Structures are given as structure tokens and as C-alpha cells.
Image 1 (cartoon, one colour):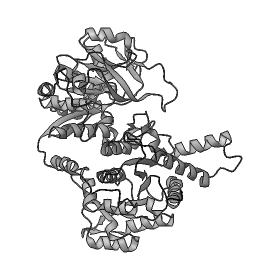
Image 2: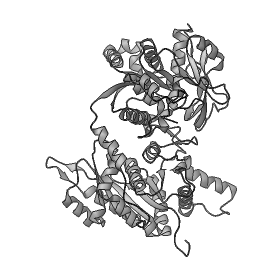
Image 3: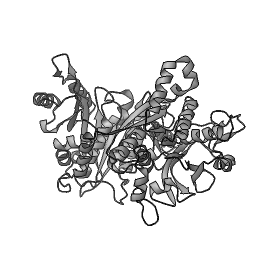
Image 4: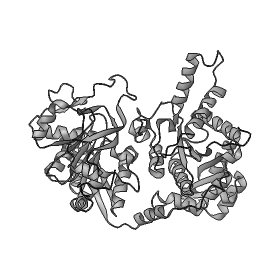
Length: 576
């Protein structure tokens, strides 16, 4: 603390109670949107109390998708929400895990940095958490030089979890060290409705707040999740028992789409309560959310939809493909369509399924054939690959717009090698290392023994080998594009020339010219495969070029779009 007063970043901390899955990530993102609309600069941190160092080795069934950042950080999907809502470029350090904290403390202990002292949770672990927060909060992530005004911190899990206790204590210490006007705590809780009477119950929230207060943290605002708007009498009761002013009790009830959540917060003057608590009244301006309001309300009024077949292996849990779903939403809504995603388990398309579950097999194929376009996203392992290959073949032979991402590109290469070049045993080294025609190979520079952080990760440059390609036109850049990667396998350079003789074009490569990054099929309405993951950089008001192209092709608008958006060089200026 300086004599002239605190000059650092101010903190808004989001905690959760009662149950998990209340939407703390969307709440934190929406609070950031509202503060940004008041002219404040925002950064964000997600705390995940699990012991994993990062989300990279977690199954999508376990924790949803792994979101990849520009610097190659494999992080929690909530950071994807932050980036999409706030249009930030976060770093791996914006995701704090128990594993990272303990690893850093143990490394310091091994070096002797603690001078022989007994290393304990308090103060050493809690100090490490505080130092990490204060260090990362001061790093700008919006392209500007100075630190942000506010850092929004989301604590994963629920209050009372054993693994989150050190973080609760660290946040308590932080609130004390930076003084009250620099720290705002918002507790997200559930107000359920019990019984046929439909009475909104406050007791779960009362208990959750009591537990939080017992740990030394006092909520400044309550964000109550409910199906229907909270009754005034319920707000009064919560105020009395939780010691939070009625004006500071926010209600995030169910809305038509999540873009309404910032509008819901603004309507309840959440920004005024937070800005007042953080002593930012003189710096903040009235909220400006006109374009955001138009986006949310326009989507509600859309009547036309486009059917998209999403053929994957984790279709039982939609969070496994959250960024893909969001990128489809961004592309569709920008063209005034609703995405109608048909989830197709790749294994249901396989010939084996026709023998074991003929009805399921028939239904999967009927669904696929009823869609306007097909998307095969990334994934690991061989489960469902034969079904994905059949989907890619169907799209290729029937002129159905197709987008293959990562694994989706690789299976396209395998399918063409088998069907067009006659290499019936063509395969990926990942699935069949003994195949004589391994058209997809393991990258030589990464470890075969360690799983974590051994992939080609993060934002890499892809050069266009054919500047007049459809992909370069969609990106509006004849030279290159920067996109995020997450893969271990790639197209085997030995087979590139042979595959190109079959009609397939490799239109993009890395800077070494050896790694093939983008494929196109000339003469097809839209058949594109990319080794990178364009979904990670899609934004609500700036959709990914390749997802946009897919929807344009599916709705018969691609050719006109390319022509009408061409500049004098023949490239669109839509997406750079």
C-alpha cells in the first residue's frame, strides 16, 4: 500500500454456492461486459481448484472442451466465455489451478527459497495464490499498454469444497490487503422452487452465505439464479438474512439466450452497485450496450434455421464441443439464421452399427442426409473414426458443404486416399501404426511418452500456397492467417503430391512448407479441412471466416458473398 492510496487493479470476485453448474462463468463474463460498457477496461482470471496442472489431459466427458489460448495454454472452457464476451486475448496464467500453485511452491522449496522453513498451506500456498493473482491482474489482455481497471476473478466449484479452501483464504487475505473499496465480492447462488405451490426458497442461499461469512468473506452483491424472476418479498428476506442491501440482490433468471444476461444485469443496475463499491464513479460512464442489445434481441426474432450435422465422438455432452457450437451460432446469427444442430454419434454411421443396432444406424443416416451441411470436429483416439470417414465421403460425393477441423481434416485425407487413390489400408499412425500407407503421421518433435503440453499448441501462422483459394478469400488475406492449433498428428509430406494428383488441393501450410494446414476440393460447393481450430477465435460480432463460409454454402449464398465482398484484388475484407 502506498501513502497516496492504492493504485492497482480493482477486483470483482465471483463465488458460487449450493450447487455447481449455476453459470458462474456466464455471470462473470456478463459482469465484465457491463463494466466494459461503462468505459472500464477489464481482465479476468479463472481459478480451478482441481489438482491437474491444466485442462489438457482431461477427458471432454469429464470437464467439457479444452479451450486453447494464443500462447498454447490448455485451459477451462470458461476462459472461452471470457474471450468471446469480452474480446480479450488471455494467457495460460489467467487460469490458476491447484496443480500450478502447488507445483510452483514445491519448486521453490526444492531450490531452498524458503530458507529451511516449514512449508505450509498458510502462509506459503496462500501467498503464492495472492502473488499470482496480483501479478496476472496487472498484465493487459486487451491490446493496450496499461493495466486494466478491473480484474474479474471466478472461483470454480462451490463454497465449502475442501479443495477450494486455500483459495478462499487467499481471497480473504487479498480483500484485507487491498482495502474494501478495491474489492467486490459477488456470490452466485440458487433460489429453487419447491412443491406445487411454486414458492421460491431462500434457505439454500442463506446457508451458503453463512458458510462464506464463516470463512471471512462478506458478499457485497448476491446473484440469485432462478427459473422465474425473484419476487420482491424474496429479495427482502434474502437481504435481511444475508446482510446484503436489497438493491444489491441481483436476479439472473432464465433468458432466451445468454446474450441477454448482461442486459439483465444492466436493467438491475448491477454496474452502479459494483462501480460504487469499487469507488470508480468518477471514472465510469453510463453503460452503452446498444449493439449488444440488438444482437440479443435480433436472435430472439429469427425464424429461419439451417440444419447442421455435427458428426463427432463426444455428442453425449454438448460442452465437449462448446466453442464449435458457439462458432456456428455466431456464423448463423450474422446471416439471420438459427443454428439447428443435429448431433450424430459417428459410431452410429458405421457398418458395424447396422448389424448391432439397425434402427439407430438408419436414423443416423436419415438425419445426416436431411442436413444442409456437415461438420466433423477435432478429437483423439480411433473410436468413431470409420463413421466420420463415411460422413466425409458422403459430403464429398454428394456435394454437401463440409468443414473438417483437425481430426476432421485428417479423416478427409484418409477417405480420399482410400476411395480415390485406391489405398484401401490408408490410415493414420494414431489408429494403425503398422499401415504401409500412413497418410497421417506423428509429429517428430513432440514426446511420445508424456501427455501434457506435448502437442503443437497455440496460435501459429499458416501461409496460403494458393492465394486464390476459397479459404484465402474468406479470410480476406491472400498471404496468411493466424489460428490456434491443438494436435499431435499431421499429413505425411510423402503422400502430398500423390493426394494432389487425385484432385485434392493443399492450399495452406506452415512456415516450414512441410506441414499441410488447409485442404480444399476444387469443383465442390464447399469442402474444406483445416489442421487448426478456427472456433477458438470466433466472436459474437466477428464470426470465424470458415464457419461463415460453411453456413453461406449451406444456404446457397457463398458465391454471391465472395463476389459482392471482393475488393480490387479479389479478396473479401470481412475477416482479417
